[in-house]
Amino acid sequence: MTQPANHTALRAQGLWFAYREQEWVLKDISLSVPQGTVTIIMGPSGTGKTTLLKLLAGILAPTRGHVEILNQTIHREAQRRQCYLVGYVPQQLGLVRNLTAVDNVLMGSLGRCGHGKVLLGLFPREEIEQAEAALELMGIGHKRSEKVFELSGGERQRVAIARTLLQKPRVVVADEFVSDLDMALALEILGRIRRAAEQEQITFVMSMHRHGLAREFAESVMTLNNGEILPGFPPSASLETLSAGTTP
Amino acid sequence: MKRTSLVTTIVALLLVVVLGQLGFFDGARIMRGLRNLGILASDMLPPDIGVLPVAGHALWETVQMSFAGTLLGFIASLPLSILGTRNLFPPLLSGIARFVAAGIRTIPVLLWAIIFVILVGLGPLAGTLGLAAYTVGYLAKIYADLFEGTDPEIIEAVGSTGASKLHLVRFVFLPEGANAILTQLLFMLEYNIRGASILGFVGAGGLGFIMQVYLQTLEYQRLATVLLLILAVVLAMDGVSAWLRKRFLLSTQT
Image 1: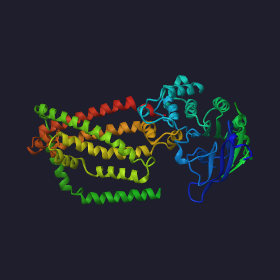
Image 2: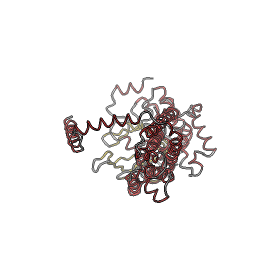
Image 3: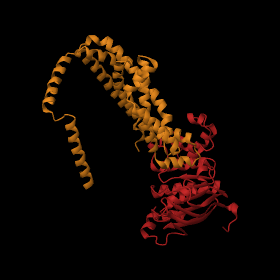
């Protein structure tokens, strides 16, 4: 709230959310994320991290409160209009397994594409070039024509990020998406994200359970617990989690 | 566990009662039936291959009818199934689409054939339209259920890129469902080949007409040839399905 508006990429104010009436998953969550930074949300599983991220990405509508990205209120019904504001990478990545890597990346351009040739699978040349460039940036340009089910876990993560990069949103919300990777790979992918954040001034908000990675990569860390959010790491961070997160 | 065994007991009891009412425990009748089966089988042997030219022609017509009917029905079922996908369209619209599909499905294929015989006259055109109609009702329901089962994370992820509903259908629902779409289509083609072979009973073209003639004139050896031809086609279809599945379907094993 104290920062100038043009430096705040994402602001959530008084978010309440319940899947069933009166069973609050999130209670009065407010947070603010500066532009071009990486923010990590931690917290025990089942505490509502995924729900919070879906609210921030406009996939769920809050019961009360609102989310603003670059001073524009995010509306669930306006995803197509607001796709340049926020992109979302779910935990299981949400890739279409039967399509090739480059086709999956091209999904990122759908918000800008019409319905003519695209429905026949013919994307504009410049979108294809950018999709290939995004795959190159992620280091898997040579896998462009392989179908997603043929790719390894790490390669799929990169395809998912490349898709979001092609979407060119100002904020990327990603849910535990490096959790299944070994440490070296997680470090590499987060490094690429960090560079994208700095170079393109993209803001990343991610959930994560590895403390080591969070320490290494996040400008700010928040902890969600019992539906409420606090700045910093979880107070009861167990040694086990800490060591699991820092082992190379 | 308790509940499962209670349900099993009730179903078993129901089955016994129903079988009794249907005459399954009438020993003399069943024995007579078995004897007649022996007689019928011996009357069918050896099959009379003299009817092959006639039956072959009718078979070709049957295959044409099933091929055209299945594909026409398939094409028409896609938009209907998409409209019936509840996670894509509001309940009223998807409800109407599903109701239409259920209505079409309620009418058995033989009745559809009769309706089209009335509408367009005797012959394979009526049969083809009848098969197409039934196929629409069946596939629209199967595909709508299939699309609804698409992994919500993929819909959320691609939806958040700003994709429209049409984009989602083209780039998520169809490719994700491709395996099941093809499998069901092949099943329907197989089903329609068997179905098409009796449509001639009501004058809607194909093998059915000559089957009916051979049945009524008690020419069981000729009937046997026709049945063998149908068996051959169904087996051939099995082979083609297996090949197509192997060729296209291994792809989504993750």
